[in-house]
Amino acid sequence: MTDTRRPKGTGSIREREGRHQATYSFVDATGHRRRRSRLFRTKTEARSWLKDRLAEVQSGPIADAGDLALGQYLSEWLVSLSRGGLEPTTLTWYRSAVTRHIIPTLGSMRLINLSPLTIETFLADKAIKGRLDGKRRSRARFGSKAAGDPCTKHWMRRFARVC
Image 1 (cartoon, helix red, strand yellow):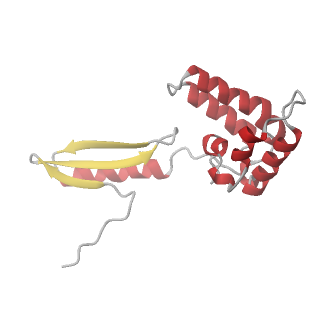
Image 2: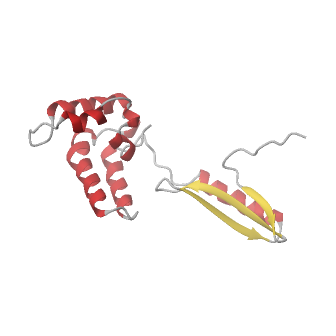
Image 3: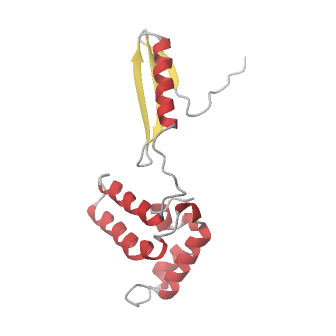
């Protein structure tokens, strides 16, 4: 007998203590995977509840990346981080990097148009021009972040999440 797996994202129903437990998982607005479950007297009730919850997950609030600008996205992202229990100094650093460097240069760009090449150009420009006050950043500090694939860059993993 061949054991076939269910597709991911379909939830599950199992018998537990004479009742039926329906379980599903989803990714919340902060990007964390969450799991919800509930017990029912009958398997039919469990299937119905699970079907409704999965429909909510599928039609949930998904941002239209084509209409959203990077600046707007990053502003909303900073607000969501402030509620997430991040260290105040980390949040201050993120806010400073976003408002002083990323938004003035790339803030009006639509997320749908943001590409690794755009980010490479931004980083190269920052490496050449330096800071807003005219001082140049030391190569030792900035060079390691500006080398290699844009999706592996330290700040890229923290900010845009386009990769």
